[in-house]
Length: 234
Length: 234
Picture 1 (cartoon, one colour):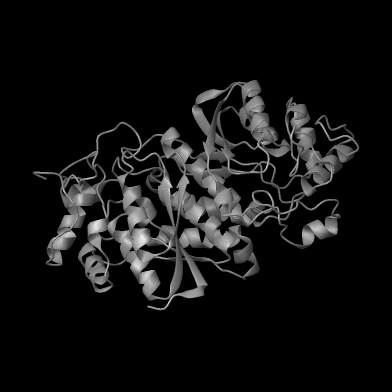
Picture 2: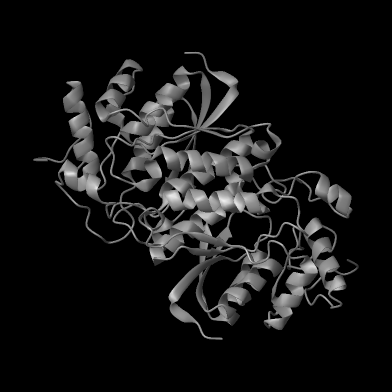
């Protein structure tokens, strides 16, 4: 793997399975990755510890931005609303669930855009995925495409053409199993990642929220054992 | 003025002349305005005191979000770069100046979008203006239109059509003098506002940066005296 210092990119790193895989893909493509994570008022900050561990292992710069979206409320991930458990796939796909955080990816991508422009690059990586996902509107290809169009009108580098914005979504058409297989080939340590919407205080995954179910199904389909830590009896 | 509690809107309130005028316009249109300001690492936090005073006078909810864009750098407003002074209009219009903060309006509008969706509304007001302005790309109509398109794909309310997003830009085609005349008719107290990019420690405007020059020209053309406080000899 050869990293090109002149090929900088910003990565949204959540500490989960998807963004860790995207990090490995971006590095394999030679990008000098600068990661950003958010302390956004999420119920459990354990994912930030995972993000820090993943960034450290990959030897990349990692910025954590405080941005308290819980001031607005409106989501089970930032307000006092129960996280739904043991939903079947049909239910998952029917509605936008209460774990949706209003405009979260837009806020995160906008901050990544600011960071990228300050770095002099337009390359931004995000691990959105519209197959095995929670039905959030801001994970779909037409949303990403509209964000990219907007970003090229918003920024100096976009308008002047010196650093046109590209939102890279290498996972968007992959199943969770395909993502895991790709990550395993690139040496991603999934034991460092957590995907759970409702982990215990010590960071063990619940095994029953949408994110845990999609993840477990992915490992099952890939014929692998999920190395993340689950709560006893999960 | 009758405020309709069922007609909520989010306003980006900077503490400057433009956003204070937009607040008065939104209230005159009957909106229940919820304002948001940002502590984003700007060189001087005096504008946040102005924003608080303006919100208090208008009797509206005012959220201040910490969001430290100075972690990224890249602007004279957030990094250690001199603010340009006494530039003529031709120079102002020629380039995007160093006071441009990378993707600032995109970051701010995205947070307003999150706040709006949590409130159950899609109405967002911003005081951008593309006539007497500093040449920032994220103040122009085509950028705003692209943001609105993106926002309607990004949010639950936009996708489901329950709260379609509208970015209201009532000042976009007005000169600074026309903005001031409109605000005066609506009773805006411009003595509470500050527009300076480089105020003194006690909050007096410099009178020479692009923002001060555009503001002073506006008052001059409107045949009025600017009630804001300028530094001695400015």
